[in-house]
Length: 125
Image (tube, rainbow, N blue to C red; front, side):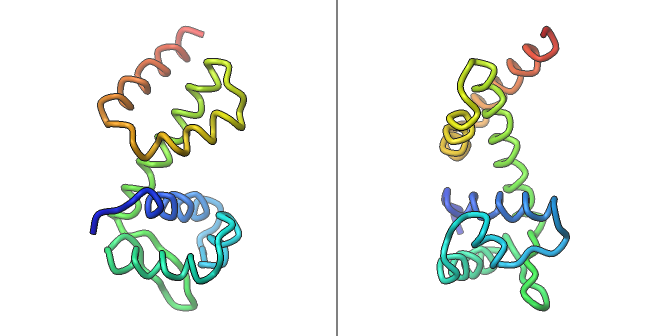
């Protein structure tokens, strides 16, 4: 299964929620993302079928190792890009919104170069 941007967003959301609570449910994802229960239910089913997610007793969502790897990568991209844009003077709202769009399409090579540049900038500040 090829994961699309929306799938990455769900995995990232589940990852972030799991950092706050050890028990993440579909309703938590609905509330966080602002999506309907049927939309989240369908996405959870697809992610489960794709091997990215498991659903435990009482509906607890748990990322598989593959799902967690993708979620962590997406989240890192989001945070690094947001920080970089804010260092350039972009407002926090615009920086996070733009990072959310770019995190799914940027190449590993370009992201690694931006991350290196940001780290060097932070060390020199």
